[in-house]
Length: 215
Image 1 (cartoon, rainbow, N blue to C red):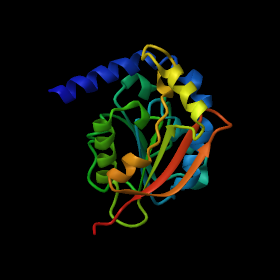
Image 2: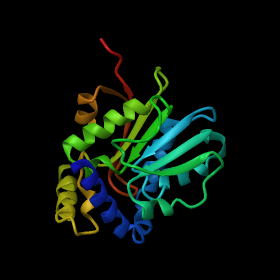
Image 3: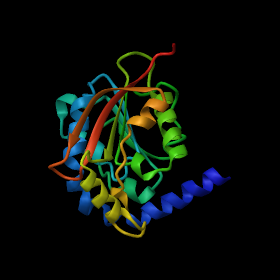
Image 4: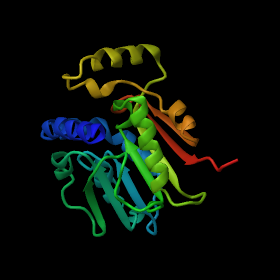
């Protein structure tokens, strides 16, 4: 019951933000494009974007015809945010669902992306989302997860971001910096690529990871 209640509350919050959200998407584009370059989905693959919001990841990927996966699903709690995704290529869709419990089969995806989502969540919810990403990915060495979060290696920038993010009613509340490395490691992911993007858009880090094989 609590799980359904917090999902509904989060959906209502993002429904209220949906009309204003596209105004700041330009600050996300550089990191999302970098994430898509390193994830490099192939035409024979399938992708799931967790916490897709207005579908910016899918929309940016749709501009790369030679690299489009054959199927892509953007998952989000908020119906109004999903409406911002607009028309998508054939075989692509959006799905209103919680990123911790996506109604897709085990191993459905070759690539899972999660951009500008994990730093908004508490530790337990982050762990649940990372576990769901693992469930969604097909077995095999080629399956991969790409994560984008607000982050800077410069302490003064992190302090400034935390000050901006203080107080959740603020439009800047989503700028709370968070490095995903420790959570990924605890969830059994091994980072294979990491890049920081401090000069264009939000200070961000992009991490490509694969799930560690059982020992």
